[in-house]
Image 1 (tube, rainbow, N blue to C red):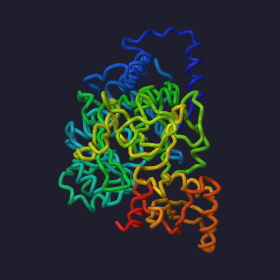
Image 2 (cartoon, one colour; image 1 turned 45 degrees about the vertical axis):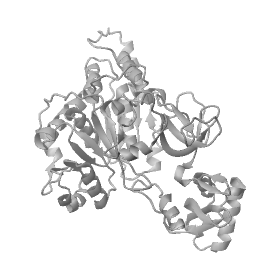
Image 3 (spheres, rainbow, N blue to C red; image 1 turned 180 degrees about the vertical axis):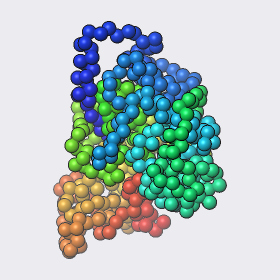
Image 4 (cartoon, rainbow, N blue to C red; image 1 turned 90 degrees about the horizontal axis):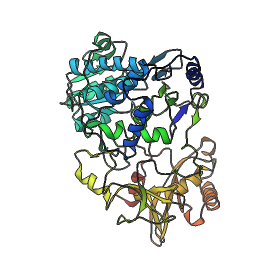
Length: 511
């Protein structure tokens, strides 16, 4: 969930400016309210998607003009700190100038053309946001990645995407050098660092020398903006393609209706730059003229995060503990059966997004170069997510588990999350994964793989197993308790930290 900060001081400054009595001349272009209203109407599907759209030109540069005309509070557009005293603040005008310089680096030095693909793997450094905007200005397709990627991960992504360039930091550069000869499409390697490295271009040096003059390319709304590699629990990561408009305008409505952002607000999202949520911050905050706040935080530090922030919830909506909340506009989200029929409230099925007769423009285009995967994800008029859930009469969704993860024991359907949540309430359980296991009588039963808390490592396994089983029976429905328990030192996970239940399930079934 997004985390945001209310700019109280900045609001006070705005109020003070309004009381000074100086008349404000109307701008020679639509004011911020009209501009945001138009973008939001497109995001909600109330106005048609324009044929041409570029986030840098059509939104960021508009805010730069509004800023110069005095129609935006004097807070920054981007604010970065490292917790050690270093700080970066850019206005929209400064962001525009620097991103044009960065665009000249991509185009003039790296030789990237519109449609070329570039991989960006950086920690929470200001350059990540700068390069992201530069890609929009040049039409270069951005492929973000997390800093934890291994040599194998990098090699796979560079080969499959055919990326022509990579921009990364000192920590990942040696990994890239190890595999770069196996990636024939890779032409340039760019380092974000204060030092140099053989075979690499230095981004900061190039940025200082670059011109601020750059003409933004004219991109169509359906042109590719970015490619994200999924971190699914089965198979190799898939490429998910997003268009200029689907991301550029797709989050405007959630920025207003969920987080209630305005041009005096500051938004902080603690997500790693390799995840989609980092892009969500960018594309939901900046259309509203809000400031994006970034704390470098190499590792999550709850004390730092919980010292300056408020958890954002849909404005005025009642919170039901444990639910996923309601569907976010403009999506029509339903629970469907195996044939794609909408199920009534209370019945368990698959979470699905309606894509016919009209596909939400802000939805991803397809699984790139994988038509079979794209087709398999569609059922009737819906895109099926693969997540099991139910929707109550008030429209709140309640997650059960992944389709493949649901356990059918003696005709009882059991979601692994329910059992894992029950186990998590016991102090002995550090983390757990629940899967199906073959059984001659019930067909399959619940088996729990459990990583114990250090204080319980010396406990008798049989006694602890019985204690945990009785605990689950008390916390949830008795038939859901794990009839089999295995204590393990660790659980298999994806690079994004998701537990790979599929590996444990295949292990149980001998696959």
